[in-house]
Length: 93
Image 1: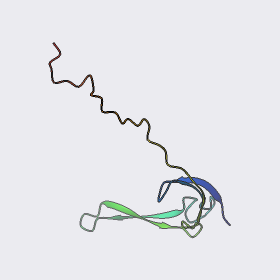
Image 2: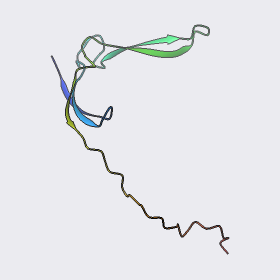
Image 3: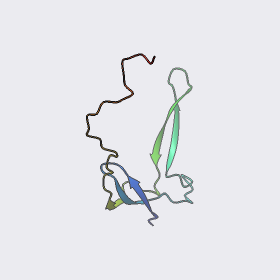
């Protein structure tokens, strides 16, 4: 069963997408969508990092593009070559 959610994505282009969400009552991942596997350093035995494995209740690749969003213009655009009146080499006295 799909549990759709609307999200904004920025890669490869900014767009609204409809995506699947993890099952909230999943007994394996508890609604997170994946299972964390921490591991330690081989020599010291201390925590080094963790791996993440996706759960069976959720498909990360299930997404559909609804609407591509336009690029935001860069404001303000200044194409003048006026010198800055405050940028000066002279001392302030």
